[in-house]
Each structure stands twice: as C-alpha cells, then as structure tokens.
Length: 209
Image (cartoon, rainbow, N blue to C red; front, side):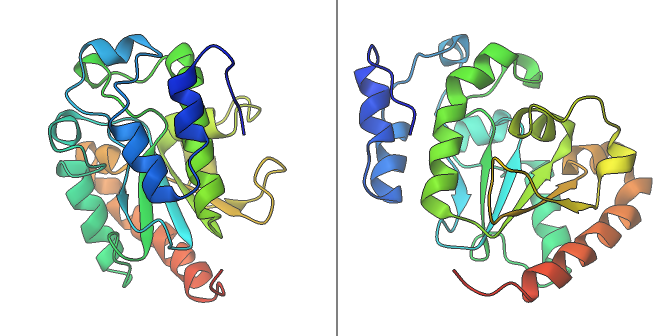
C-alpha cells in the first residue's frame, strides 16, 4: 500500500477496508492530484463485478464515461461488450473494467506519465482488493503503464499473448487491441475475435478464487 504523508485524502481512500468503501471514497474524493481534475465531470472508478476473477484495464475515461461515471459505456465499451458476449463473457458479471487513470483527458488524448503516476496507486489498490486471476490490457497505453519495464514493443507482436510479470504474482496477463482501434479499423475484428477465443480457454479453465 502506498501512503502519502502529505495527502490525507489519498490515505483515506487507500486505507479503505472493503472495495465498496474504496470506490465510494475515491468517487466522492474530489481528487486534485493531477491536472485532469480541472476538466472532468466525474471520477470514473470502474464498471462490473469486483468479485470476478478477470480484470480488464483500459486507458482512460472518454466523454460518455465522464458523464455517466462508469467505465467503457461509449461506443468502444459497447463493442467490447458485444465481442465478449460472443465468447459467453458478461462484462457486468464476469469481470471488472477499470482504467489506468480515473479522469478524462482533454480531447481524449492519452494520459501523460505524470497523470498516470498520480493515479496509479488507485489502480494498484483495485488489483489488490480484487486479486484477479487474469488481467486483460486493452491497448498499448495500458500495457505501457501497467508494465513500465516493457520497453519498446509492437501491438502486432503483443496482442493475443498471455504472459506473467513479477509485479503481479499469480496473475496471467494478456494484451488485446483496444476496442476503439477496432472501431477505426474493423478489418482487425476477426483477429481480435481469435485473441478472445484464447482468453476464453484460459478463463473457463481458471478455478474461482
């Protein structure tokens, strides 16, 4: 747990004893740890089931997420739900969806390193509470920040492959194309479907926590 002696609000959030208390504290905190706070409507904590064994991590909230205070509810989120349904996965029941940062960046740009640094303790706490067996990383930004020692990589080589990392013991990680990328290039949808079938085989054979 990463406490900040000069940030009592963050300490209260990170010191929560249950996931529901953590979520309530973060959503209502009025966090100003980075400049994204100046333009957000809501802090977007998650969507789904924190007791599930699969965690899905994206980049950042978009406009719809910012307005509804729920992760992945825009066009990309609807496509993600659709793709997951095709393999029998219900994103509301079978997984928890979160983002690397909890506030929408202006013009939906990628979050800056200093913004991720300010917000990452909250994602780490979500992982600690949830203790997922599988983490799906949506897109290059999620991979880059969740695995900062990854170095140079191409999504073409990384997408669809399971791997492990010492920072996340006991967890299988898989990189997937971000659904927003599939919206921009629908030709990649069959490849995404193949990757999700690999995930499905791992998911259905993963024992419950």
